[in-house]
Length: 193
Length: 193
Image (cartoon, rainbow over all chains, first blue to last red; front, side):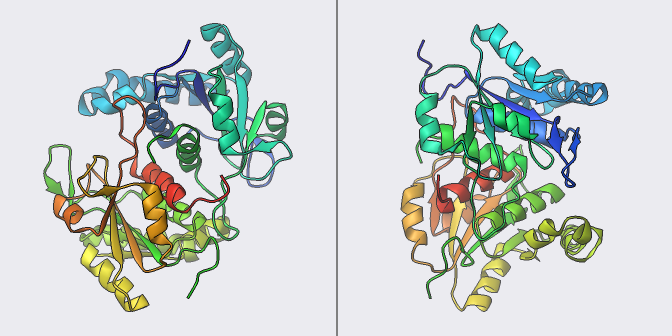
């Protein structure tokens, strides 16, 4: 099946809150940020990606995400701002990345290839042009974004692909995850530059 | 003078809260969002841009921005998170775009060329490759971003350049201004893709 131009419903996003590092290098559960959910959803919707998975094992945080999603879909937010309603239609909360992979496999019949993004260069990192070429195969893909101080190293090591870090000027590179998602989707899926 | 690679201290950013439109198409002052200030600053710092101007005529909002900046520069935030301190070093609050242009002119001795970004296509819109070429001249430039529902039309009309809108898939295009800033700086100044 060939997808229509601008539609990338085979490319899914995961915003991961566990396992990630904190500033001290410890493995922690980071807190879900309402704004990260909204921004990721609006950015994903702009670039035509599939499901946005919010990954957290904490029940209270899962409830928060469910409330955000339902607020924009049926609450006051839906009437006030119908474009956000549209933007959040494909958001889901999951316990773990394993559950995300299982969900995509169940929906599509294919196990997704996983792609990690990282602020530091890795041995297996590839460039954005190479990844654009890979994505043309139109298989199932999962782009994994870490919150906090980055994805736990086993997730990185087990991924099928790792993208080159986004390099800016000088030594400074502390992009908010929202900004990284925007830049990476634009590099991989942007058109008409 | 030729700037070092990755340094774009001649390219400044303005995050404009007046005059912008609200949802109903009225000209309003939008509220400053703390997070927009932080994100814009971190994104600008990553791409090596010059001063980040936060434009609002409201004294209370100006005080809020001054507090954000000073918190990260000297308050608890500076010790807790030194990278943010660095990210906010070049933020300034101004009453109006005219004041921003005057400030750049005074600092640099050159009136900046203004560049607007807009969600809709305009008669004078140009592409990102053309703008990259223009920016190589290393004159003074001001990239103007509107909050709310977009920049008031006179600002658009008077600008020296307008960038093509960021097109995604289907009809949906409601990127948060933070995401638009990230994508546009990456398109104009990004390296090593």
